[in-house]
Length: 348
Ligand code: MRU
Image (cartoon, rainbow, N blue to C red; front, side, top):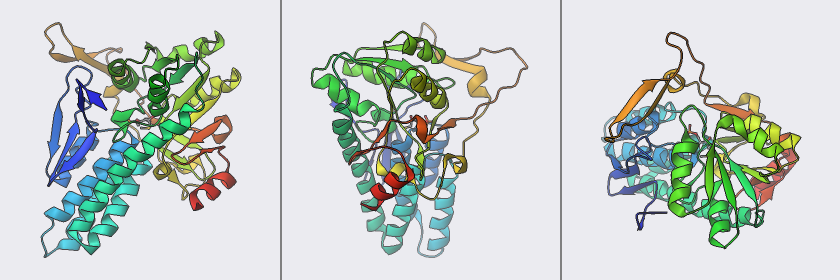
């Protein structure tokens, strides 16, 4: 995607360095970070400087490849196994992260070059699949549609294009008159900070809404469809996505509004029979208690916005049961989420 007229991917590798857009600084500053060791990649993931299912997968794959480059011939297996474990312990919910470490690990055992090639292929596949999701998802969008999205499943959350936003970009580009309602997505505000920044840059008409405004707007008839991303999809079609997704899906059902999930095949986890088996990340209470932003001189400050002394609970994701989902837009087809359909899809 273009930023100030220049094409960027969210994360990319050059020689033995991994470059990435520092998402914690957006939308206030656009800066490129650099990781030269697998441990640097772990820090970028843990601090959420790189985030979003596909981007996490790409970064984890590149991190695994760096570990193979870093490993000396003596203690080789010990080193790369430890690195794999550390990368996988950075964040638990997004399936793409584990998919990537596994693939690059298997290739890297054959040779270091294979590890590098596999990591690059995973990133390229992610971008290709996101583009294809856009083409399929665009078929569902009609001119005049109001579309609700939650969190950031745009190009920043993947290597390029995004998933939930990919059809929206294409619909806008093909001249459809659409309007996007962007859930702010407390506590980290990925909607208000990242999705809004992406849509603004691309000239897509949109507005940020408070997280608790969606049902009201649905009742008013201005939202015609919902598209979100996914962090992990179980064998029965239950979907783990950013906290707050479930309540949007329930509200959409009430108002007869189709609720779509957009995700590549790498997000499916057939080892999880249902959403109940998906591990939900618990994040620090500070994300709820504090907010941050720039003062008039552009210096970023963190301020307490809750009652001092009160604790906060901060589950990062929730599970939307398959029954609320009209379809999962993948890179190959749109699936009605049942266990049979998903098993058939993964086999093809
Ligand atoms: O905690 P994050 O920001 O990494 O959350 C993941 C997400 O970006 C969302 O849940 C998204 O909708 C899934 S697809 C990237």
